[in-house]
Image (cartoon, rainbow, N blue to C red; front, top):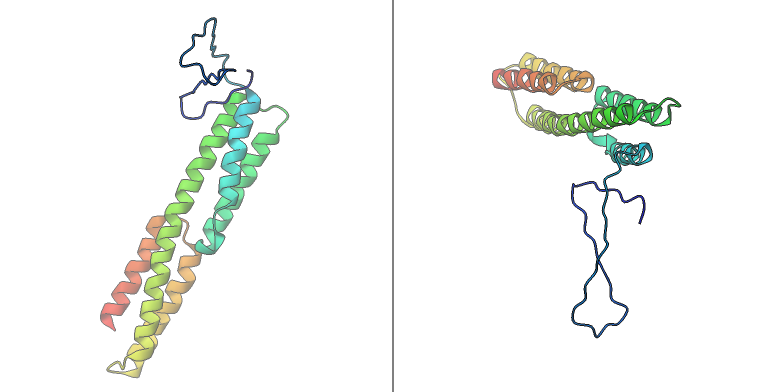
Length: 173
């Protein structure tokens, strides 16, 4: 059997008897060889990473992260289709893409947290009566600012800063 791709470091071999009533059997002269990495298999692994990246739900991402993800997918496709592609370049592209997808997933969680908090603050601003009308305006301005800034945040830390700034405004309100 040629071209067996092993992803998890394990391989299972099976043997089937031609006669179903046999209780045991012996086999001999079996050889399993490692023939090294194969460019085609490495490209297939990269394609699987690309497919996973393309399946990310973009509705859970802000504008900045959508752009980061799109660029990562473009870079991976460029590496995969390069005429001078090597096993090393394909493995690097795969690693880079997986790292970006992990980052995107972390950003999606942080983005969801900020969105939920903005919704809570909007409800609070609409349903409560502050001491002065100016307090409500100031709080609504902070909510609007947070809504804008979350779209441009390109790191989890930046989203955390948006959240914390809005939390301060909520406490003052």
